[in-house]
Amino acid sequence: MGSRDSSGVVDVVVVGAGLAGLIAARRLVTHGASVMVLEANDRVGGRILDQRLPLGRTVPLGATWFGPHETKLPALLAEFGLETEAQFETGEVVLRLQGAQYKASLADGCVRIGAYSLPWNSLPAEFLTAIETIDRLSREISPETPEAHPEAATLDALTVGDWIRRHCRTESARALLQAVIGEELWDDVDSVSFLFLLFLWRSLLSDLVDDRRIKGGTGQIVSRLAEALGDRIILSSPVNALRQWDDRMLLSGDGWVHEGRYAIVAVPRHLSTEIVFEPELEAIQKSIARKSQMAKIFRVYLTFPSAFWQEQGLSGILFSDEGPLGSTFDLSPETGQPGVLTGFISGRGDFQWTRRPVEERRRAVIDQLVSVFGAGAAAPLEYIEFDWTTEPWIGGGFTAWLPPGVMSANWGALRTPAGRIHWAGAETASWWYGSMEGAIESGERAADEVLCRLGLRR
Image 1 (cartoon, one colour):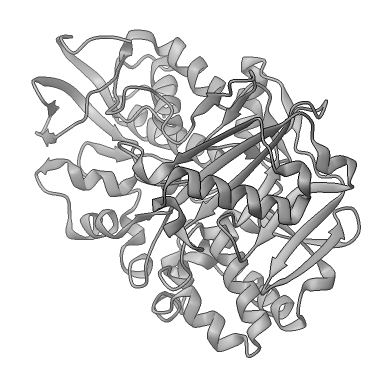
Image 2 (cartoon, one colour):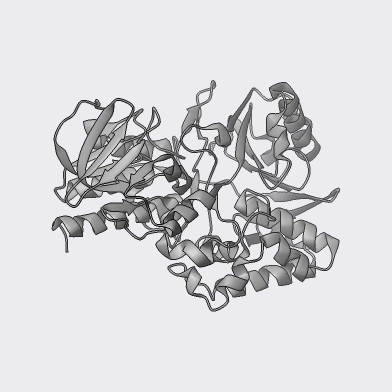
């Protein structure tokens, strides 16, 4: 996809070939700008990554689902002629909580909270009241300017865990709320700002209906975008320094230098701390980069001759506060053969499972699935796992969160250009924060900002 010895000054250098960076580059090229894309990794896609299982099914290791309220992603899929398939959501959901197990039909016995459907019969009244309160408070938040809320500093001083303990008196409600919210955040509720949760709820979770996925793998999106950009993309080129003058910028790495009139930095914001900026970024922008935290996600896949759980009237959806896996979903093809379950170990649970020997972890995962779905889960044909915390130039997934005290003081600088530097990435999106839809929106926004400065768009 190109080499490092290109010469000349381009209009825009895009740093990062994830979905946001590729979308930005495509929009710039469409409007007549000359573009170069520098990617630190040896592949494009960022948090979009597929793997072909030995039995032949291609599955997503990263971004997977989307829903009916999104517009930009479906439009892109239609443009590329990519087919989608429905997420299997027929049968019963299983909830494991504090040693008890509950089941209910997805059709008429569950309530959807963010990405998860939970059995009505298991939900304490205090839990439902707390969820209603979070939803009500979130609707007072503007996704464009959450820091402008009159109580922003007060809300930002609390962790999510602080708020839960103050508003849930019963252990059952506290435990369930900590588990559900923790799984939405993919991390520990005692680390995350409550203001950030309200923003995320308003931006993403309140309208989240992830009921479709891309047939053949999510990675087809970034592959198509990258093919169109061709040798404008240069892989394995981490940017070490970014220097700007009145009329141009110089980006450098190990043994190479490139010049551009503007730059769009489209990497997870915490990674910008690895770049030396001259002149230095303002303190407010450095602070949000330094304190932004990628969630801890470890994903597993198991395949079986068939989706045997469907024959038992189960949806394949599990939500649990015990065992390695916090949640599972059915990713089988529409035929049900082979049967494919995917599950997640996240930072909200016992993430130490990810540091144990592979065989011990595999055994624990299988034992957990057997206890929920029965003996059919005892002998998977395939078992694969992927740790996003060890992925180079990403360091976690699927999105980033903020600790207390950051959003209310620094959020206004998140998308503010720093001289000739503009910012993109799913975590710079106002709506659909952290999602593929948000990544597309951010890439288009950043490209339009630069196009206006280039005089190529009003």
